[in-house]
Image (tube, rainbow, N blue to C red; front, side):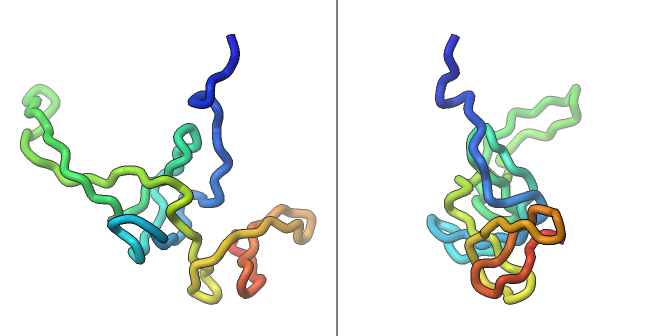
Length: 115
C-alpha cells in the first residue's frame, strides 16, 4: 500500500508554548500561545483564538453537562506567525547552527527564539 497525502506529516515552524499572531481570517491580529501542534493536519491550537460553538449532548454517567459549549478549534499553521521575544514583532523563522546546536532565529533582529 502506498502512502496517501493524509498520512504525511508536515513540518511546522511553530512549537508548543510559542507566542504567535494570526495573519488572516476572522481572528486576524489576535495574539496567543500555542497549546498544541497537530503535524498530521498541519494545524495549531492557539489559546483564545478561533473560538467555535459546539453543541454538546449531556452524559450524566461521565458528568458532562449538555448545551452549547465554546471551544478553541485548530488553525492552519500557515495562518500564524511567531512573535519574536526580543523585538516583539511577528517574524519569519530561519534555522541556524549556533554552539553546535540547531536553533530558530528571528529574521528581523537575528536573535535566537529557542531558549
